[in-house]
Image 1 (cartoon, one colour):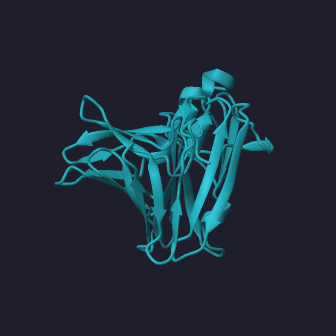
Image 2 (cartoon, one colour; image 1 turned 60 degrees about the vertical axis):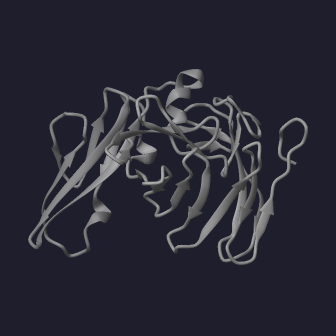
Amino acid sequence: PIIGERVTFDASGCIEPGTNVISYTWDFGDGTPTDIGIKVNHIYQQPGDYWVTLAIITDQGSKSVTLPIYVSGGNTGEAAKEKIQRLDKGGTHISDPVDSATGAHVIERTLMTTKGAQPIAFVLNYNSLLLNEGQMGKGWGHNFETYLETLVDGNINIHWTANRVNKFIRSGSKFSSADLATRFDILIRNNDGSYTLARRDQEVYKFDSTGKLTQIENGHGQFLTLSYNASGQLEKITEPVTVCVGLFFSSLDRRK
């Protein structure tokens, strides 16, 4: 939603049929008074990331559910660029491939997929508002382009592509992010200087001490290993049982 837009919240599907509900209480996360009811409306006056909490009391006890919501300032075009950089790729498409929230031209294409214990899919993505020069060209990125950058203040940036980045704030050997896309992710600095990023979807990313992504592990413990050439370019993606994908570079530094 955008600021000034009426948003409807509905708790109809949160309780099993036949349960005696005493109350539904909504906290919209923006400092305004709570509201009561199974279905309520709310208008956000400021853009930003908010956490909406629904507290339900029944004759059997109580429970609560908290979910994120992003309220746009109504900005499109270049004004939306900074926010998009910190979000997951994609958007809300009204006529593929146009993102209705920003007006951006959005493309995602799987170029190839190999079979194996852990399939390897090479995916390209593009957003017309994010036009930094990446490995695949201006505005383009791929799903193995991720690297870690250590900032001068000791905090960390995780660059998913040349156009998408999330910042992690240091607290001892652990790092956390306030960005909505990575709010539940935990980054840890290991004793050897390497880093491990545990994501909400149970994927685990491992980086060496120089920030290169070396391994991606799924929730079943299956992993892909990434290796690099002498110039630091991604050269090989290996699945542990049967599959290996090699990458080659042209003189223009584009993948063939």
